Length: 259
Length: 270
Ligand SMILES: Nc1ncnc2c1ncn2[C@@H]1O[C@H](COP(=O)(O)OP(=O)(O)OP(=O)(O)O)[C@@H](O)[C@H]1O
Ligand SMILES: [Mg+2]
Image (cartoon, rainbow over all chains, first blue to last red; front, side):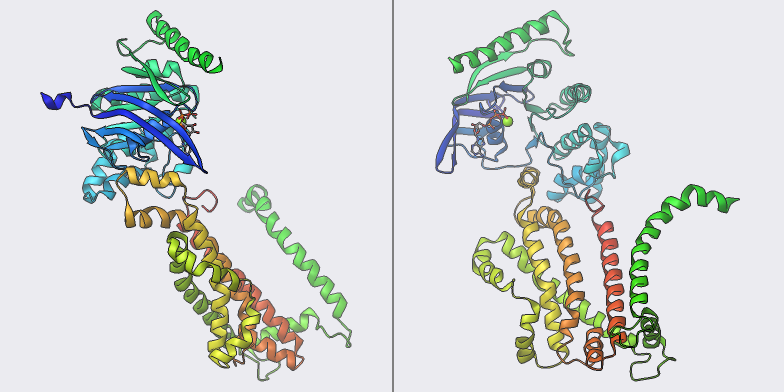
């Protein structure tokens, strides 16, 4: 009972200030966020409002300046396999083929060779890259690279997948395909996803909850529970109402900031 | 019929670069020939004399002098020094470069010294090498080593320092940290640079072999070039130059071949 109440990720009053060439840049102030296991959370907000910073704090790539940054109630001390990151620029190892990129995590953690092989096969199939197992990253399209990046994180038993504008560099068609596949994988595996995007539509299509952030300094503004049934129809009236609401939310920040 | 087809479809486009590559040296050869043939006063022998000398050096039967049929001895001696010096340079520069690149303390300690020593040309080291290592093969070996050392060192340092930061993040979130990160991320990421260094270095070893063999060694392509110069046997000098050129080229091709295998993943090498 008590355990169920502990969120998988929790940020309490988190502040982050970067020191850059003698100047302090306050990227995040008083951020509060609770993520339940299995939730799909989308973060949106103007450029520079600290979305990436928040994600990098959850990953453990950065440490907080103030406040608590917890996973299962325990402070996050650094990066680890339980929280996998999918970068917009993929971050694949160019010298490893698809198979070995996906097997990198299990191999690092000393898994037996047969076990690695089985795991890799399973996740290559999950992302539909069976025919590209022996291909190097520079021979893959952007969409395929991002599939490898997702499989690499899943093959390493990540509980939380952190995605920083993962589909931002892809064309519209590929983007929609990957959104569908991501939802499909998420609903089958019970993963927890924290997903940063600039697209309101993408956030509403994917998220259980959409968290809106605002800049100067970065903070969390509002949260919206998207109660639309899945699979979601982007042409439906309800979807468009959400789109209008969030769009006016985001634009009011711009107006406020300018004024 | 099949011959005709292969010529018209695949032959010409494949032959063209080869013919172009041969055209230029042929033109040079022609100029050389007409500038030197039937001119007894010319200090440079005509190509045909050099060709005869080259054959005599390799197989004998033409001049039957002290140099006849000795090419293989000199060639092997030079190859041994080139590759020996190269391997030694590799063994020293690779670990040192990695340490300088990744360990700040080592960098602060030795990098300034190396930066100052690096511009000193190999030829300037010749007298000192002969004092320290004496006349003979050990000095030659040292000079080749020195010439091969810096390209590997500089490129290794560059390679291990310019690993994309993103890859460290990717590795650590996948559970690869500490020394494992060095072997599984830094080293493979630096491989293309290291390889470029090795290629430059081996090329340089062939360049300095003549200087290296000016240290009073008896055998080696550099040694016979220097000796033939004193005897005014210019056709031997040119023969030696040609052999160095050919073997330097073959050696580079071999390295490239290995590189293409090893770096198939890299868009700029594979
Ligand atoms: N490593 C860093 N050093 C110094 N300042 C940084 C660093 N990373 C981010 N910042 C600053 O912190 C603020 C928030 O940056 P962040 O990248 O988190 O924003 P973002 O919401 O992800 O923006 P975008 O939508 O453009 O990706 C910005 O002002 C940025 O300049
Ligand atoms: Mg960002």
